[in-house]
Image 1 (cartoon, rainbow, N blue to C red):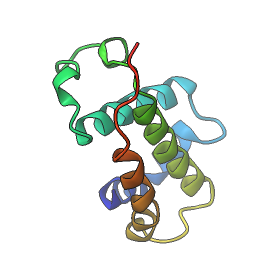
Image 2: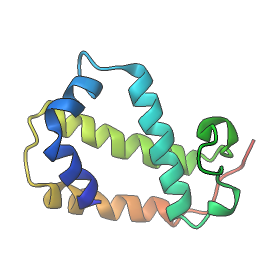
Image 3: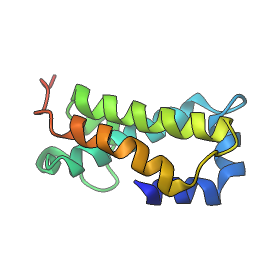
Image 4: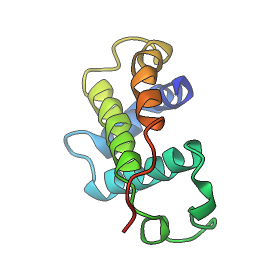
Length: 112
């Protein structure tokens, strides 16, 4: 997870423009879907993940745990950017990592 925050910090002006006050709901939704898919793959549920180039949202089974993790991670990124990136990427990643792990251990939710 520190890699994500290092990437965001390196490109902070761009991510601020895309995600913060004047940002784009379309971009936020796209990132939520991408992070949810990454969570699904990380949780070992990649067998039903869409093929590369597919419409990830339409073809990915619904799972509330994936959605929760995506929202939590992206919410942390947006809050961090809005506050001018206090703390290092490693510190932020290490702070939220135990919570992400705890959620990732939850069995897959219902699909539908």
